[in-house]
Amino acid sequence: MALVLTEMTQQIGTLTMNNPQKRNCLSHALIEDFFAALDTFERSKMRVIILRASAGSKVWSAGHDVHELPRPGRDPLPYNSPFEQLLRRVQDYPDPVIAMIEGGVWGGACDLVLTCDIVIGCETATFAMTPAKIGIPYNPSGMIHFINVLGLNKAKEMFFTAAPMNASEALNLGILNHLVESDKLESFTRGLAEKIVGNSPLAIRALKEEFRLLSKGHPMDAETYEKIGAIRRCVYDSKDYCEGILAFHEKRRPQFKGE
Ligand code: LCV
Image 1 (tube, rainbow, N blue to C red):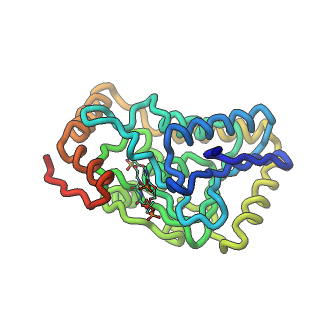
Image 2: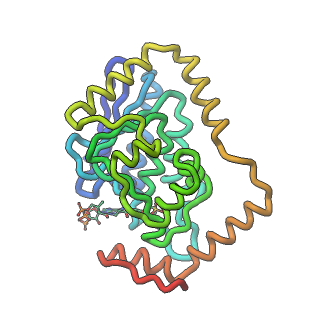
């Protein structure tokens, strides 16, 4: 079964995540299909990409596949992991990528949404950033995505509480560009994509790359980089990291001890 469905019409490529049984979690297999779809869109010169889940989904994506998180003592979000490669592929995709959201967006799927260029949601859209719930030391490039969009205080609250944020909060905080009624979500998103298709592709590609380079975050000295590495290692070397993942497998709340 294809874990991702694709459609190409009027220079707009639509990618639909299609693994509802596993709540569209970003497994290696789904990410592989994701990459293939983006390659097809690029070869076919699609000018705008829409990322979505199937109509009526209660969960847009449950985030990183927790069963594929590495064992304790290894960085759970290494630079070359399929998940991190997916975020960079979307972020660096030459043309605009629109995330069309209905249902819950969890953990790393929130980061995926923030690497898109425009986010349009309906009233069922929620966003929960879950590293603290599982015991994951999120990675710096991911955290910059949240700081850039939400600002420091709201990004901290989203990470510290791991609580789902509703669609109107997401609109107020700038995660959503637009909040529309669910029965208008597809037509509104398509209409915005068509507006973009009508403009200069070269100018838009240059603008997207300029925005990406300008928003990459602040240069970091070597000592700071090493300090962040040490801080993160203390977490993924911890017993709490094991407990967080075990609790997920056992479908229970984790009992963190701070060890
Ligand atoms: C693997 C899953 C998942 C899943 N992985 O359906 O950002 S970080 O740092 O935290 C990063 C590491 C990350 O993204 O971590 C993952 C964060 N995601 C979450 O915490 C969401 C975990 N999932 C849930 O809370 C529930 O599944 C939701 C609320 C999304 C949907 O609840 P619902 O009752 O509709 P189930 O929980 O019954 O899930 C249906 C199937 O999908 C699997 C889950 O294990 C179950 O599989 P089985 O039927 O084989 O038991 N599944 C859900 N999320 N992230 N597998």
